Amino acid sequence: LHTAYRRQRQMCIRDSHGTLPNSLGNLTQLKYLYAYNNYFNGTIPISFNNLQSLQGLSLEENNLTGTIPSGLSYLSYLSYITLHSNQLSGTIPSSFQNLTILIELLMERNYLTGTIPSMFHNNQMLGQIVLNLNMFTGTLPLYLFDIPTLKLVELSNNKLEGEFPKLTIVNRKSIRALSCASNYLTGPFPEGFTNTSQLRYFNLSDNMFTSTIPATLNGIQELSFLYLGINLFLSLIHI
Image (cartoon, rainbow, N blue to C red; front, top):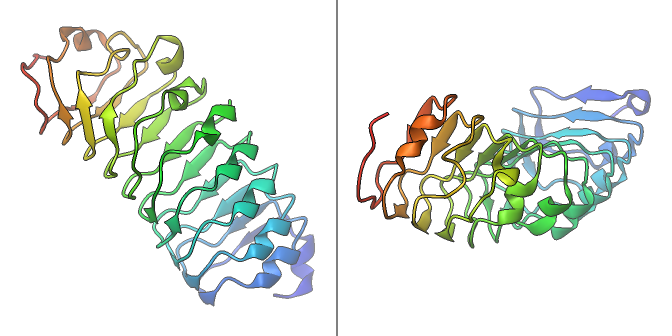
């Protein structure tokens, strides 16, 4: 890339193929890098660790492979990470706990594994976490719902198991959309969502939930989409 790009604060790469150039790491003043919907393959360059001014990284809808570089966690201004629809593997680096102002984490449609990382416990700004269509395992962490700004949680089509954590009014008041469909979740219907006024989309279908569905779901005035099919519930409600 031409060195004149070093002065640019925003870069959009379109209709490109091959590997992502290591020289992009020289653009130390770059704030937003958009390289989505291209034909890039190979790995995310380690040189991206040098983009200390970067606020938004958009690499979705390519053919990127390999793991997510842990060095991205040193980009302290990073607010948006969009890596979905690639072929990335491995875990989300635990060092991402340093990204305390992250607002959106979109990593669906990859081959990511491991548990939902505890890094989100340090984040008080995260609004969207989208990790569906991966291979995450383990249980749903309660701390994920402690983030006061969290509005969208999409964890469907993974290998999550165990019971849904018991939520209080404090740690579920901001959530607008929640999907944990097509996992291996068990136990009773999740407590904590029956009186919320914010929830609009709720999908727990294709799991192994048991017991009854509380009639108090009728009290969620904003609820527009409710999917509970393919479970082991003992009763139905009329909404």
